[in-house]
Length: 391
Ligand SMILES: [Fe+2]
Ligand SMILES: [Fe+2]
Image (tube, rainbow, N blue to C red):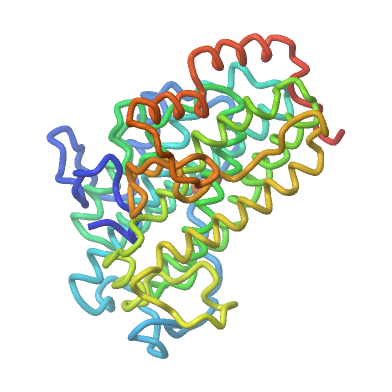
């Protein structure tokens, strides 16, 4: 099963994963912290960059003492594991927390090498702040697992630090893709961290109070990550050294992976998470729309897509008239899960009528190729491929 339909990709990975033989035992949170420091070493993160960053759990005040949606609506929120109504709900919550924690550590693994190629001191500081906060988010999820979910939670907290992005072991597709350079980084933070904003907000009204109260501080920090992505892309467009058709290829690569993060269109996991009051819609408290529990993932994904379209509209205001405008890829393009999985559509969402071989050629033409990477590497050498901050 997968939480809220954030279906594991590649397919076939079951959840929660079985304990790996190498899983270290954790009997308390201090043990887990030792594993965390070992993980930092193992992935080669230069911890001197982190300065005096405080790794700690942060809990906001309760937004509402009662459950706000689903079948338990109006009843008191659950403060402890024992108050969670039954084993199925406990398992679903554990899974949601594991998936969230997995993305946090994965993103640091993906981005760790960028510290040596930062285009400016400002960008290096932003990267290190984002990495520190992602580590803190993983720390927060591990706190919930170790303190509330018994032996299983302790095993899962250890495993958050054992899977590796570069070994394709992270639980969701976007987090096994290499972030090759700073253009990938800005596209990733703009679009994949933005998925994070959606996931965190959907958990922020959870019936399990410690999870819900974790979300406010995480959302505040996440806002900086999205902002870094968006202003980064603005600065790239302003500098005018990376042609928009080349930039578009990187958007085409990352954005469909972010669409996939919302999970299968008709997901029973998302359905039950809503019924049990543990994960709501992104706009739960703002919308008058009647809830359709069968298509929750697609509903949230469509809200996300609409936001991507707006972001592109904003960027297009500074794209010079001589360059093609940027587009948010269609929800049908290059999907790995859901109703459009494996089907032939163009970036714009038109059906592609050619053969499979012709479609493979089309994909090569709209996704980053080895030649594109080589071209970018040359552009990066110019050092003025990105406008200074605040220009
Ligand atoms: Fe995060
Ligand atoms: Fe983030």
